[in-house]
Length: 342
Image (cartoon, rainbow, N blue to C red; front, side, top):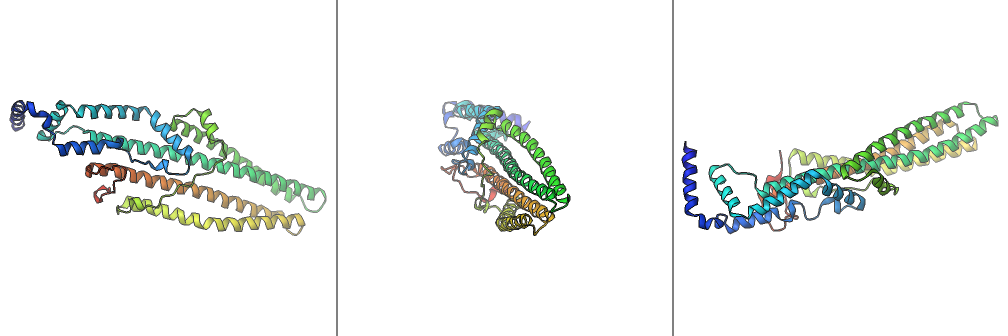
């Protein structure tokens, strides 16, 4: 009953002040609304445009522009922003505030759209990193397969010359067969990853095939975590810890890889000179292959950790715009302490 009388009282007050309804929103409130929805609620410089990988930026931009849901949301936001300048919309918002029944504002809708764009960009980037990881892994295993065939030919020659038993040829055939199975599995997973990337980026599979047929490796994506330093919640700390752990792993792998390469070269030279056996060469080469694959996987983990951190920072900035809407430079807005999520 109280709400009914309150609504009637507000209606009478509106009729009395209808001529001045355009001033229901104060100049300060108008500035807040304009600042909050400026720059289309996205950082002025998205993180994917600052990394040294133009193809990644192209795929993300294409996927964002072609996503039908994001397109509909952007059109709805533009329509809401246009209607927000009309006196009827301002009147409805004013009445809604009085009744504590506020509809979604352009600011809230803009942040919702910006969040969706951040998450979509992250999904495309993760799919791209996976494609590059599998491409790199496939090229590595193919190079080792050629080397394994060369060693097998040498082992067969030594067996035919009566210098070694058939064990060497058997080990060489086993190494080739195991790697061939891994190659087939990697090709299948690469085809599935390419299909996922093409779907997320809204690119034709044949077009994507042309773009990624450049022999590129996993991009170097890293974030120093400074953007999330103002947040001390568990999520921010976990993201920074994951990034630091992968960095530490990345730092020690080059030396391990060099040691494995020297060992494999020494084992191959010893076998060809007749002073070593094929079993030693077998172990040394598989160890070298494992270390190089570990480095590829670590590079991909580093890229994914950076993407997770950038995405989290972007989502926090979007929410911070609702808390600090008076700042004119939306893209450079610092994170407030209240932007941290539990």
